[in-house]
Image 1 (cartoon, helix red, strand yellow):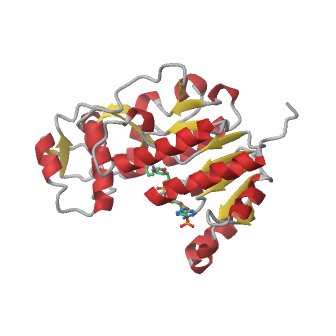
Image 2 (cartoon, rainbow, N blue to C red):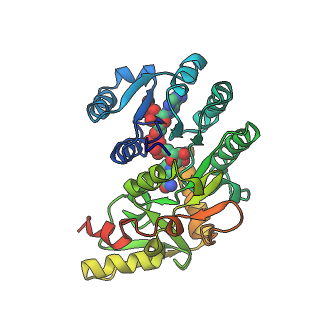
Length: 310
Ligand SMILES: NC(=O)c1ccc[n+]([C@@H]2O[C@H](COP(=O)([O-])OP(=O)(O)OC[C@H]3O[C@@H](n4cnc5c(N)ncnc54)[C@H](OP(=O)(O)O)[C@@H]3O)[C@@H](O)[C@H]2O)c1
């Protein structure tokens, strides 16, 4: 080791998770490159965000999935690529990135846009949420076929989206009067602060223990059922919430009138809180648990997170 930190390219840097990846990459001392698309120049908020990154030391590169040369040129300047793009069509655009990596051959590791549930465990997922997993699997297989070194980060549930509203998804502040409980509220979920997701991701980009592995983010105190989370909130506010229990059938029927975008999020919620799809241990030859690798990392606990909303 020459002590030099790997150069990291972040694609999707101005998105919900992307901006946190930039912050974490810079904080850990990685020379940080950002690929931004030309369309962004008409969005003043995003341009200001990019300039903010630049002022913190990031290097801005313009490029697009529609311009293979721009991808190749960006890849030649870095060691590791972290993609945090979103949208079903855009997830598949990463195939062009894989093609460019095959051409460049020097990429030491690719972390494709994952950061949710483990796509390979979600073959049974219901539509329309299944498309996200299908597309993430297509990208995984392309990476493996091309022999590109990888880490898939299975980040589980964003606390700002899931924990903030006690898993309600129509509001991102915890209520103080009532809460809908899915089934008996007894399926384990893994709630992870978004900034912690980004720190774990950046800690892992040059960690040999996660090379060609799936890293499951599993902060031990945050593996909690919905009911346990509600109880933490009730203790914090000193009041019991009215519980509205929803059966699986009632929940699925309630989705009928919603837009496909919301339906995607709600079917993922169904997988977690009715199907119990996060109830497994990180195991097998490919899975590693963040807590085994980074036991001293001071993550935000569910209680600390909810205290912010008092
Ligand atoms: N675990 C969880 O609870 C959770 C929650 C949310 C998301 N996720 C996952 O995290 C990943 C990132 O999601 P996010 O919510 O951070 O996404 P997001 O906020 O929608 O941001 C997506 C990023 O992708 C970029 N992008 C979209 N289309 C593009 C294109 N054609 N070319 C280049 N860039 C494009 C956007 O660029 P511009 O800024 O230029 O528009 C944006 O920066 C996804 O894989 C998603 O499934 C997980």
